[in-house]
Length: 188
Image 1 (cartoon, rainbow, N blue to C red):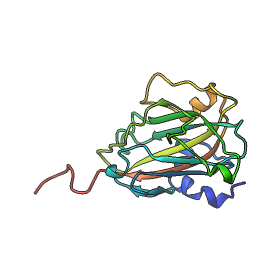
Image 2 (image 1 turned 60 degrees about the vertical axis):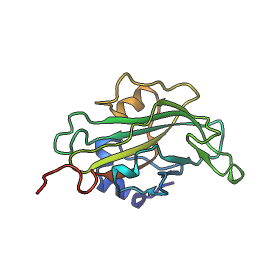
Image 3 (image 1 turned 90 degrees about the vertical axis):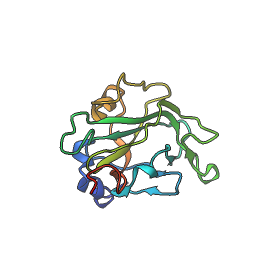
Image 4 (image 1 turned 135 degrees about the vertical axis):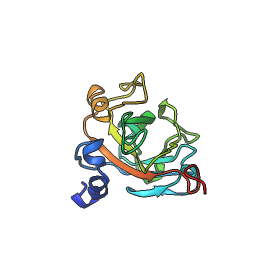
């Protein structure tokens, strides 16, 4: 069971409020990019760090449980005018929980991949300001109960969860990302 301090970065980063409601974390979620950069809530990454989809580890204790993973940008196209929020960058469903240490943990998109990538990973490319990229994990009622929305822009995580009977999140993490230093902008 998560304590309030576990969700403090999500509150400070306005993920709770802007994207999801307060929830009780009940499953471990770990996200690492190919450069071995682990995403911890509020960390800062550059677009060059997030080009390829991350490796995601999801805990759990029963292979009969399935999860849906959603990755959104609530600051698209810019934090000062997020008129495309939430932009859906990735959607994976039917991810099984693990059964213990002997299974080590399930990795999304590993060679033994058992989840369904419903919408392929679209790497973040923020052009203005600092964007939050939010990864939210939901418990599914069963396999093949979640379907792709018809769009990526103006996605709404809360409505999606309600429409797919996903309930409250079971885990969430986010990173901040802005364009690379020295790219674009004014030249002198």
